[in-house]
Length: 117
Ligand SMILES: [Zn+2]
Image 1 (cartoon, rainbow, N blue to C red):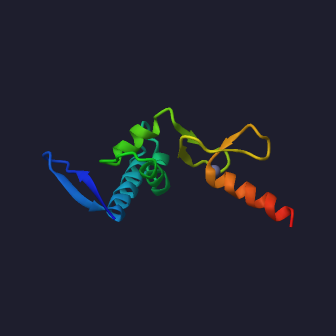
Image 2: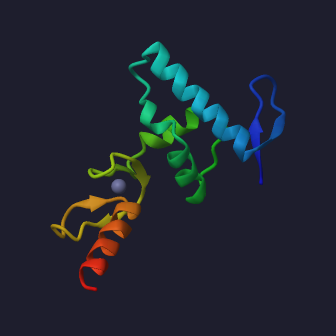
């Protein structure tokens, strides 16, 4: 899978692979953590969050876009696994009011299913 990425210099678009893009996301995260940059939330710079955004049709030209989209109102943090997710998640089966990510929602559903076997 190829994705396009805007070059840092000039206005040319460069082709890059998803693997390379994820690698640059991880490097950005390392830099933020290493340099202790307070106004950048390192949790946005993760593979899972980047893939979530891509799956939701967002265009990510540089890792900084992750931060911009992360600060967006549609971004939610799952209280169970602490991961960020976009848009609608799941309603927790434990209390029927807490919004959780779809992965945790799926896990709760599986747990309930295995209880009934
Ligand atoms: Zn979760």
